[in-house]
Image (cartoon, rainbow over all chains, first blue to last red):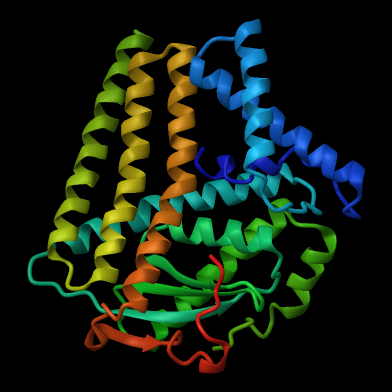
Amino acid sequence: MTGTSEPAPDAPGPAVVGRGRLGRWRDQAVALGWLVVVWILLWGDINWANLVGGLLVGAAVLVFYPLPAVSFGGRLRPRALLVFAGRFAVELVSASLHVARIAVQPGYRPRGAIIAVRLRVSTDLNLALTAEAVSLVPGTLILEVDRDSGTLYLHVLDTHGPGDLDVARARTLAVERRIIRAVGSTSELRSLDVTSPEKGTRP
Amino acid sequence: MIATIADWLGAGCLVAGALLGLAAGIGVLRFPDALSRMHAATKPQVLGVLLLLLGIALRLRSPADVGMILLVAVFQLATAPVAAQMIGRAAYRSGRVDRSLLDADELAERAPGGGPAGPA
């Protein structure tokens, strides 16, 4: 339930290949559509006044607070999306319980570590989605994002030595793999296969 | 019958969410440094809020309320990591990190020539 809400805003995004004028307009229209949906949900009632009001407010938001264009070159794969959502929910629950347990465990001082994880696909969208998903799961906290090299710097809670760091690294890359499988393009999927054996770990 | 089950499930979700919120509060008090505290402040709380919202949705059950609750959940999930990252980054950059508690720090090993140019 939780995971599906993540990539949803990009879901109806068309497969934009070139950043043409038409594609830009289409992105804007999709964004406007989502803003209208949010507006109607906020009022909790569908009628003409809300629809017109939503269109006006949405247009104003898009005009006055323009965002950099995020190109969505992939396509949605429902099964992979379900896998991602399911694993996300499982990790969310188990990690929440873990952090809650060490929070109340008497006399326990958790140690931590800061690790660098270099993602294999360094597009803005993948970086943002992976950072969001990793950050929502307890035990890992994003400290810094290097956008140029596509590197996430994470603080990992409750480590017991170098082995745990590798586990955390592998877990982050697994999250990235599931996201790319769910919403990535075919070329991104390929780059995942090419670089997976060497694990993409670099400080 | 179904209404009763939904009520009880909702009550269970509310209690579970409240307990997670309590654990988060205890964690903020007990964890040794700023970064570990951020884990407690942002994370069990995410699941806790989701459970609370689920519990409320199970008790209210009207489409308008569920839509609103869905919005709250989406915005909660979208904004919690951003806030956590900004605070964590500020804590790290202002040196509020207890290095005796760190097993590794690969952010410090980053080439200093690049500078802290990470755009959030």
